[in-house]
Length: 167
Image (cartoon, rainbow, N blue to C red; front, side, top):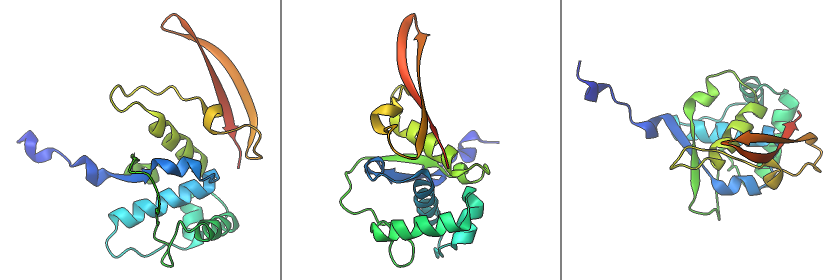
């Protein structure tokens, strides 16, 4: 079998989100819904928006929470009348997420953390050393517990913060 014939186009297995998404102050539920709708809009011909109940099941949240977050995304102008994502006035910088993210049966919190780590990743070295406290402040109600830790990496002490997302 010819290995060239088996190669996949990586762009067909990923979708993009603007880097500015982290400045919009979305809760993990809202971020995951927006990412899911972006995935569907990018890879499904004849995009038909799922219901709040379908989104809730897919992203492991209550239907009320999904409906509330959809309403907020609409009010912020991040969704059009057909629930397709709208990214106006964003920078030209994007990061991509794998489609498989929505096939793993994981919740909105894990999706958000994984996306943030991919956003922070150095795309040349594939190293990621995020400081969540720099971007996600512990004082917000969604971040209840914050640990500070010191570890040795390569013989040097590295200081980092861990925040536990609740909801």
